[in-house]
Image 1: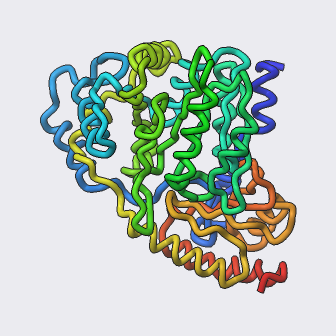
Image 2 (image 1 turned 45 degrees about the horizontal axis):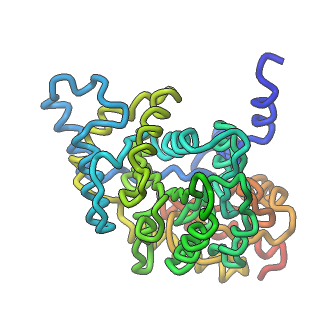
Length: 396
């Protein structure tokens, strides 16, 4: 075999999201894209805000000398200062540029965090349903992902997390708003988790870190505001990306923020900076680092996503599907009308030309994920197919 045994195993169990995305591309190629409703990938179809394109244009027409050169491994000081200012405004905590590492998206950010804190055999706990790549990221650095069940409505269950904590637990990784459910973990549950981690960290040589994947933190509906987890727990590390907030996933730009109230923040930052270099990222893309401060905090139209959510959610409920109403991100995670989620997703694809992802790809069989970061026209066109499938399986 020309590749490692471990990579061969990973290929066989590779992400359902990418697998369905590739099948979607093949189906569109065979049958024409106009008739296919593709809800597989969290790949926004909307364009970035005008200020992003204006920033690119400004840099192209008036380039700064040396702007494409290397910079400190954790990023341009002015970009890190911009991010720190935004975090000061959001949290009221004394963030400075020295608490920020600019990264190659959230994926790069999570990898440098896990590289910095994990020893071989260490465990990272994540509530499930979860983004399946978390497990691969932990394994990249000798760790193991340990899953903790969430409540019936997919909200956080601190008691379930407590039952998973062992002497090898190094971190708890939470993603809110959540991919794949769109659920937002409420402040009370996060505060309970923080108190749990404080208690379970007592007597340990190293704390149990709270890692927050904040990729979707600006995509909140119904008047919700982000929870300041930094204010709840000292050893908190936030990993964030501009992929979804600016509709630029292909540009691979994000950051890691270390809580300024964490006593060992300086040493942790040193480790993150070294990890950024030795993992081969070296630094985040220079051009994107230059653009981010020029965008001046602009974000995508959350109200537009809320309209898509409401259209989809109301229709699915009317058709008889059981689905928790998401409060953030751009995903729905309904129950499948049969136990075999793979078979149901295959039926949607083969007989209705509707492409979704089976829930087992996120650690939760008997569900399927719908990504609604698509044109409203695609959502509306798909509804008849979802209704026909509901009738076929006796939902309505």
